[in-house]
Length: 246
Image (cartoon, rainbow, N blue to C red):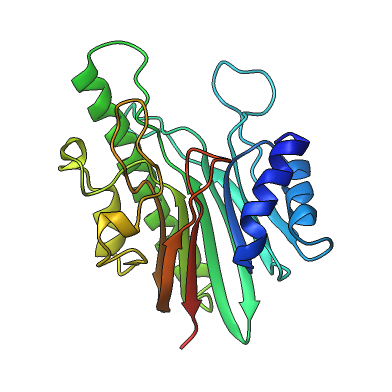
């Protein structure tokens, strides 16, 4: 993020008064820190920013995932997705554990495979992109069960958010399981029950229709008001949700 981009992003985020920020397509830790200070100087801690390397690139990839918060994290880390049977999802996830009002909360930020196709058979490449998202979310649920559930069981409230690059509205995603994997594991989609007009996060462009590509999911929370904020700063609009501790 360049300085002007950071200032523009901060102007969008500042009125939302976020306690926790889940970021995707951020450059690095320094950019996250500058964004936090631009929103409110000294208010935000960078709990974690990934440092993923992308294949065939030197240095770090340009699309990292991160978590910023007004609260200090108890622990935080990031992990790359693993290749499964030749399916190799890009990037990975960031995770942070917060203790807020005596509640132990685990938060994940992720950015799943896009729908970009640069060559080859379009139908086959679309299926491959879908499978990469499904494989990534399967790994995420394994982390929830085998790492958090088994080794840090006091973390009994979870939030998962980010750019999922899929939805249940468009025919091209009709058979995709990415979102249903989460709901089948007891996660509640914060946009659940809202019509598309109230949950557009990726406005129509280049022949593509309005879409919901960005989501927040919660487990063991009361889900409050959820909305996307229109902006020209990014082609994805930020999603805001009140997660209430019951």
